Amino acid sequence: TYYNAENNRARSLIGFQSRLEIAILAYNLAYCLERFN
Image 1 (tube, rainbow, N blue to C red):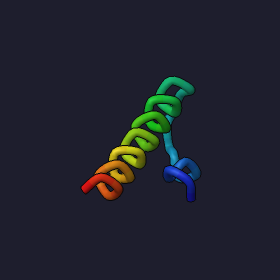
Image 2 (cartoon, one colour):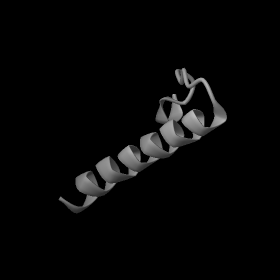
Image 3 (spheres, rainbow, N blue to C red):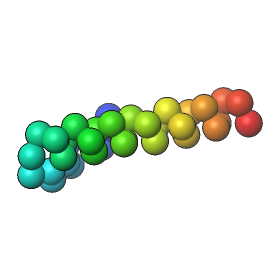
Image 4 (cartoon, rainbow, N blue to C red):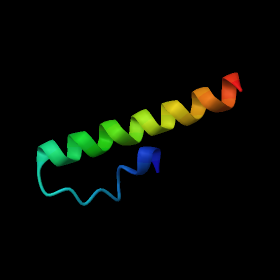
């Protein structure tokens, strides 16, 4: 269940890559907010 990558329903490689990048960015943002706040 890392970054919700298994449930990705992107139709192309570019869509998959962009969704994965957004998921990782959101995870890192949540981690930073929790750690430094």
